[in-house]
Image (cartoon, rainbow, N blue to C red):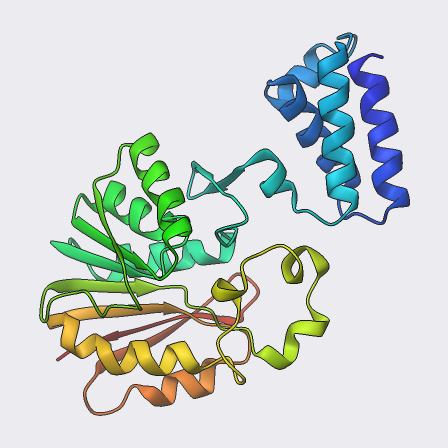
Length: 275
């Protein structure tokens, strides 16, 4: 079995299983089975698969057909130009979350100390530490998620302190210049309509924000003035349909409230400053 034939067969299986982007998915899974970059498949289509390579490829295809996300099979997801390890213990970082990084770099300047609430894979805390060299902290209520984040920090050479706690409960008052978060914001009522890759595989604790999806926004906005130094910024990713509700949370105790859309024009990030 050559790489070219394996790709054709894998693509056909994924098409029949109604998997999105079947050709790309087959390429990623085959490259992972071979322990090679995708470019290798195009340079050496005549590569003869060894028995173990074929067994791995078949298993990966089967897992994907069962709904397991490709990122959980390869254990990798790129975020802001860096490869992060991901497991079913953490939410898969989305490209949209990169808008939080871009907003922080634009508005918060050079923070001395920053906090990522609900860090998951550590994507925000690690990226901002490497981009700004600020002292970075990250929290998560899941010890399993923190283990993944700590491994990513070590592998990428980031200096981030991690704390297992509920939101920012372990963080000292007036200790941060910047607080960022991509909180769980999916309403529980929307669970049946989610893609199976999300509903059946990604951690519930990282997805759902209570009956309305706003529970974590309420708590983070209410507690952030305690954690932030005067003039510090709070920057949050917005879930679909959350713009009006979350904007209304920023009352007289905040200034410079800004909403940043994504490339589709959907409100994606909200930023506000403590006076």
